[in-house]
Image 1 (tube, protein in one colour):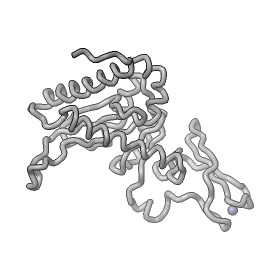
Image 2 (tube, helix red, strand yellow):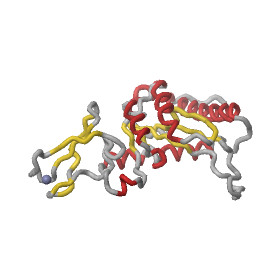
Image 3 (tube, rainbow, N blue to C red):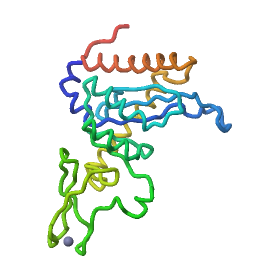
Image 4 (cartoon, rainbow, N blue to C red):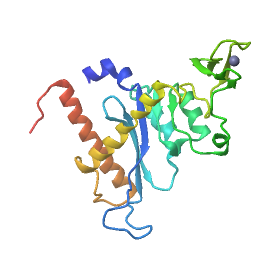
Length: 235
Ligand SMILES: [Zn+2]
């Protein structure tokens, strides 16, 4: 993929991971009924909306278990995700560590845990007001915060990055813009289901379901590749 490989670092600058398959089917409203029982977990490039890594599994395993394997698989394919946008369901301390270990900044909204309820995620404050974000040191894994008027001594201090204080602060414009990239994954799942026949499933058994998902996604990627090369598609 000539065009893509030239820009792949940028193109994969943010990836979204999502577990959204096995939706309740429209015909069944009965409790527990109508699920296909499988989930596709995918890392999608937020610039191109294309899936760069995916896993199909039975619906039982928690979606947060797929972040590390998907980021690793994406990296093996040459897509180092500089940021990873995930929804609230992935807001677990472990996931932040798994992203940071892979040099990808986690962009995840907070769940209302007890820490969050007591405001432990807020910036430091002093008599002069709420402290301002003043940069991140990725190597040391810390963010810098500064007294709003500069009258405090010391004027700034470093906070170790964690779930409550990620390296890209949730208060920043950058965080908000990166989180919007998460919509890529929903759009892509929608297209795969509605335009690429990912659903309805016409096969049974995890191996066949995996094959069906692989073929569907590879067909989509092959078309994207052909378009990127400007080559006409074979009839
Ligand atoms: Zn102050």
